[in-house]
Image (cartoon, rainbow, N blue to C red; front, side):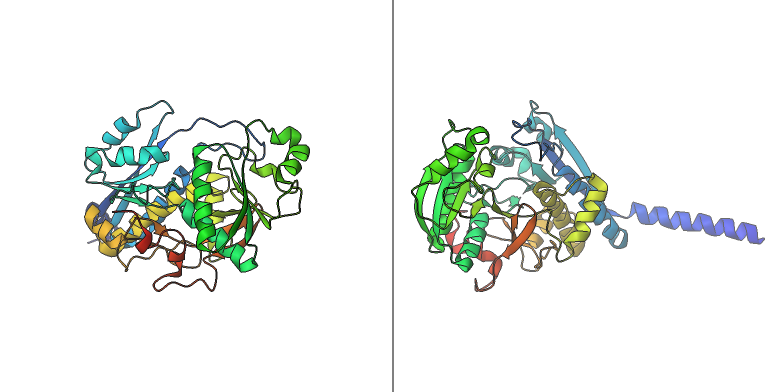
Length: 387
């Protein structure tokens, strides 16, 4: 047979083998469900409103999953479902169909259980990639929902560990007017009691204050007369907290939702390979990776890790492996991440960060636990209200 014909025949054979291998690949279908938000009032020109937080993290993770899938004969598909502000999120969820059973949710906290309780959700595994609510991990938990971001209790405990290490134990708590501020304040009070902090004062920030125009006059007066070591602020919307630093009557550090914050991810984080993830994301997105991007990335990567290890695309097999002691996920924070079987929370180190620097990482050295030091953050198994 002429050499040219042999080459042609060999090429056809390689194509046939490739097509057979592609057809034999196991497909893992993942949905990313997101409802758009209204842009909040512009309190600062420094941090523009980002509508697609989370989506680009999921896209980066699906690319990483498929890189691994080339060697494990698995293919990962990401179905992005973006619902308008006034759209019907329930209708969009029901339209996912029976063949998409792994769903990453980027919806507000009240919608998580609204979707989880739908008949169509009972055969699916849901990944809550946005909420911080302790109740969703506690008395309102659903056992087919896994939570990615640290809860408010985990964040408050992380701050309390650092404050105890510094021996800054007398706190002045300032609480905003929103329901979220009240929930964060409750987590701070729990952490204070847990770690022996003293709440020497607590005040509510009144909406009649205009922190931007009268910060130099109002804040010194607001904080005057209290003897404390740390000012703790509960302002999740960012309505006033940024204006407390450097304006208090006494020279005191600010922590909480502003100042020194506890977060899952931060642009200043560069250790343990994080700089490579930061750079890859910035190259793709043209901006810094936000917490929601990181959470969506972890959710999709967790699916990839579990499906590769189990060689399965079955929901129950993937869930059982994720909740087992064998599961370990690289999170670029120094320790492998895993899920708590009692409430579905992803256990993970929590970053303590100032606006432009990483200050520390919790749990801090010296805070011990019989099984995992990561379980010193948030609600441990004996404390859980998840039944």
